[in-house]
Image (cartoon, rainbow, N blue to C red; front, side, top):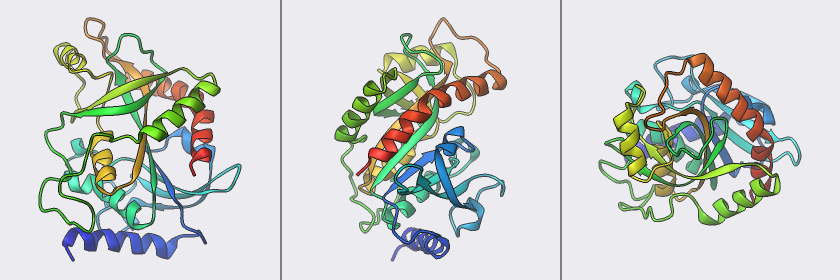
Length: 276
C-alpha cells in the first residue's frame, strides 16, 4: 500500500469513527469557508479539519471544517467540506486533492464544488452564478504529478468530460424551471492570490475562459481520477473584463458574495435534493 493510500485510509477511518450517520452519504458539497449556503442544510455534527489525521491539517488550526449534514426536506445525508486548502497558501497539489480521495473512500459518488469567481465574459453580471462545463488549467501543476496509485485511479484519466454532462443538463433544467439566470461557463484556474492585471484578463478571455478562480481545478482533476461525478458552480463577486478593471475592496466583494448566495440558495437546495 502506498503512503498516499495509507493517508487516505487513515483520514477516512477517523471520519467514519466519529460519524453520526447510520447510512452512508453519497453526495458531498465542497465550498469556500463559512458560506451562508451551509445554512440551507441541517448541521448534524461538525469537526475541524485539524482533527482529521493526517493530511487535513492546516497552518491555521481554526480554518476549515468537515460537516455531517442533512437536506431539510428528505433528510438525505450529505458531507459538506467547509473551506478549501488553497495552492497559494503553499500546500502541495496532492494535499489539496487529499479530501477528494477521502470522500471516495467514504463512498461518495457525487461531488458539488462551489467556488467564488471573477467574470471575464462581458455579458456576465456580478452576483450571478456560473454553471461550469469545462476548465483550463493554468496553475502550472496538478495533483496527479508523481507516482500513480492504481488502486485510486488510472495513470491517464480521461478529461474529455470533467463535469458530468447528464448532471450539467439536469442542473440547467432545474435552474431554468426556477427562472434563475445562470451562465454556462468555462473556468480558468490560476494560482492567485494577487489580483489579475489587465493584460492577463485579456489573455485569459482570449483562451476561451468565461470565469476565473483559484480552487476548483485540482479538486475536479482528483474527482475525475477517483471516478466521482462532479458538478461545479462559480458565484461571481468581481468583474475581470479587460479595459473595465476597477479596484474592489474586500467589503464590496463580501457584499457581492452575499447577494450571489442569497439568489443561489434555493437553487442549490433543489440541486442537492434531486441527486439520486
